[in-house]
Length: 119
Image (cartoon, rainbow, N blue to C red; front, side):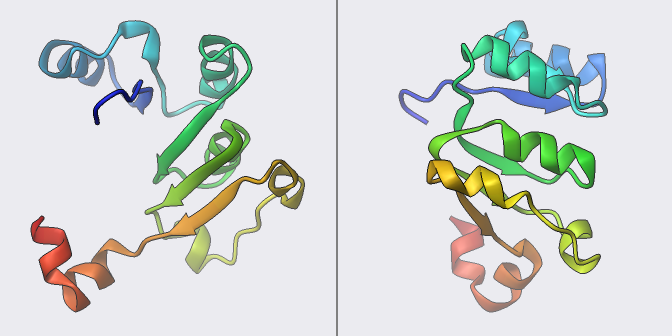
């Protein structure tokens, strides 16, 4: 994305090294996806603002941590299914800052709109 500042979470140091080497993502923008500690780290790196857009596949408390990292007027796009299928709940208070939540079922997109996936 032109002009986008990218932050990400990963589960291993090997993945960190790959993102730094192959995509030039700053090490300070890569956090641990296996712990809610990424919330504190990301908020520190964004001076408490959070991110404008998050693509999320984490579940449970990690999903909630991602949701709290969304900046005012920002959006979270959910691509995971675990919480959807398990009737998970989102903290509604986060919506007060005009944040949006969007779900995209990639499996259904592949079946129903394969031309979108090809792009």
